[in-house]
Image (cartoon, rainbow, N blue to C red):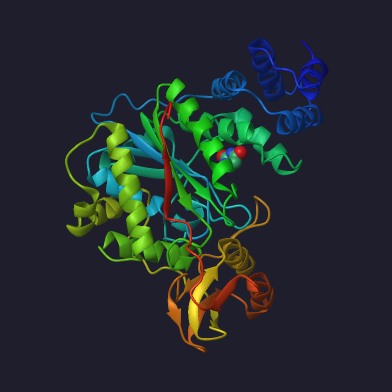
Length: 426
Ligand code: URA
């Protein structure tokens, strides 16, 4: 077999055979298929798509390129959640210990932020001492001690995806539903979780800008998980505005701890509890209701154990940015719109995110929201506080926010927080 034959088949709108898919992924990892050939194939896939059989074969080939983790030594079911990424999306932080407190194990491999969306590992690394890199034995130890572990994926997990994702990032081929679905699901299936809840974000701050595209991605991923024996369900959730009132690494940890203490913004609490119930149902664990575990302190206890087991100090002081500035409401009325993408871009420019994989992030940088869409505001009242390590960052952040919020007479309805639920065969 050779790479040109595979590229031409897809370029001309054909279906790839199982043998072609297996060969091209394996040969790419071995270096026999060159980056420029894989780029051409990725572009042909982006333009011409893949059917369900091809996507399933592509996903399985990427799983086979590395190790597959196994949690069968544990005495309770495993459940995980994956979010396609958004602005202010810190849900994993309260969710993982919450689900652990309700009786399932949560082995979660997470990523770092790129562009305007934040990454769970960057957020947790703002906790003094906390370590993202664990061996498989250490992961098992943290799971046994705390019921939940959130850490970086090792280099042995789906190496084909690692190589391909880096290539897609620089060749304009990220936004392909078959490639996104197979990339996410190869890692989640290789991670070995028994059940999975997908939080597919919809709106300006998300990969998928419309409910139709998000639904197609969700259905594809649910089918892949189900076919691989992972009980999988997806929620489509709103990302037209930021989630919660904090955007930025340490700021989001602080807000997550508020949720674990029984407080926190209502949208973060609602989505955390809803996803926890979905995870417990998918894992077949009945018993404690997540809302009770937030109230009675058991989720907070699991959080403290989880952070401490990864070297972190749950009572450690979180870093704060040296500088801040306030953006005031331009008039009186209803905050009709607060655009997730504008806020995410501004937080990124303040230092909360990175432009390249190797860049550091600022733990303290970010944005505090003093009002959410639908709230009444008065002219001159604080709308947002920007936080950065240097004042020089404020101007470009303000530029990103220009046109990103609007105060007026009562406006249209925002997207509901949970837009839809997708299950296998539905
Ligand atoms: N996240 C992934 O892991 N892969 C993609 O392709 C997109 C988002």
